[in-house]
Image 1 (cartoon, rainbow, N blue to C red):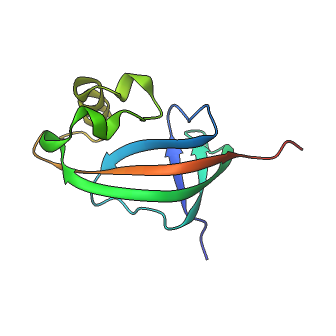
Image 2 (cartoon, one colour; image 1 turned 45 degrees about the vertical axis):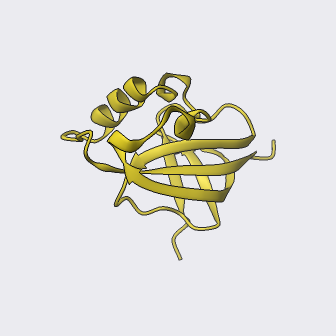
Length: 108
């Protein structure tokens, strides 16, 4: 069985509750999943807290207040990031806001 994971360009820096937003339709890990850097390095393990699906143009500032990347905590900043990660992304597109609890990997 393959390990479920989310990969981050800017991985979450803090342990505890955080969130990320992805284009809907992407496979969302269930329950427990690995958190990887874009290079594939293990950052830690996360427990899924909740997933909210909605149109991007219906996202409210409070929906993204806990985004792991401070640049994505505004509608404009998140829209720019989604357009960069998902070419052709439109404001009418569906997104999934994923909240998870991150546990850093134990030091060796």
